[in-house]
Length: 223
Image (cartoon, rainbow, N blue to C red; front, side, top):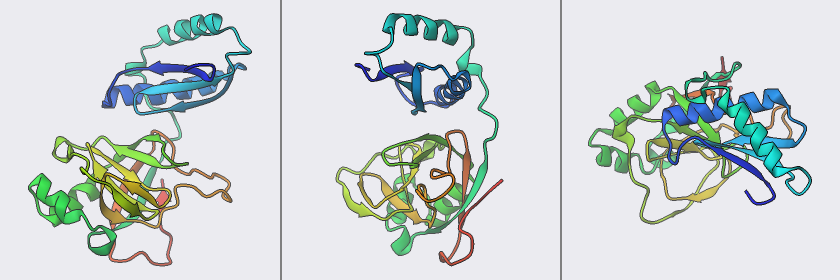
């Protein structure tokens, strides 16, 4: 990746196995704590190692990395310890999920069926990206392999839950999107004043709990 670092890629598209491999590999690299590596980050099917390649020997580091990678079958590696299951209240439909009906029509089911299906799904945090702490969640069943919009919604609010291509995204900030909004939460994906500014981690799981309104009580918990 130029002089900024190295990329380990497990697949050229998202699937459950390659995502699990990326998450496990990143956890392994963090445990190794190589002094040359300033930071690691896992994406949907890859891991980025931020390294100053103007300072360190690129060929030697690649050889070391290849040997380390070859010592494990990362496609069979388990997810890291310390993962959590989050329960996040969400208001579906209406002003809070203006495209719920459109999603239901595309899937050929009722709005109630969409809500029930999403509420019973334990989705994995596949990666964080686009904005600090913002999760991509999945992989959903094939019924939810819905295309992105042909246009762009100018703005969805922070906490919006949107869906497309067998994934959901929980927005950290107000943002434009080509995905369809089905619900709204009060969850803060990023809080710079919190001890843990980004509460969600790749490998965590999330369940969305349908509620009638987002009130003052606790908006999420994790076990």
